[in-house]
Amino acid sequence: MINFIIWIILGGILGWIASMIMRTDAQQGTLLNIIVGIVGAFLAGMFLSPLFGVATINQNNFSVPSLLVSLLGAVILLAIVNMFRRGSVR
Image 1: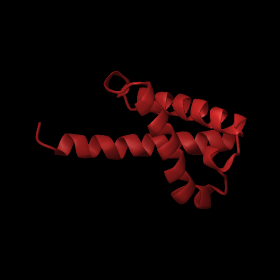
Image 2 (image 1 turned 90 degrees about the horizontal axis):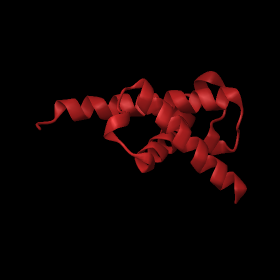
Image 3 (image 1 turned 30 degrees about the vertical axis):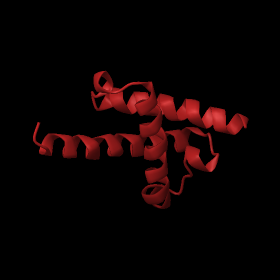
């Protein structure tokens, strides 16, 4: 249970940092930051972990390299979302 709480908190922090890097923090709230952090870490686990040989926070590895890979996944996820947002008609 405690790992789940840590996972949610770290996902929120990583999502918030990723939104600050991508300058989308004003557009999203806390819940979306958590979702971006966790989904970004999941995508990083699928695509970036085999490249770097590092597990992500979704695999219960709370080390500095895993946090950086998870953050990179969240930034990539926000970049993809921004790409689709700009391409749509407003």
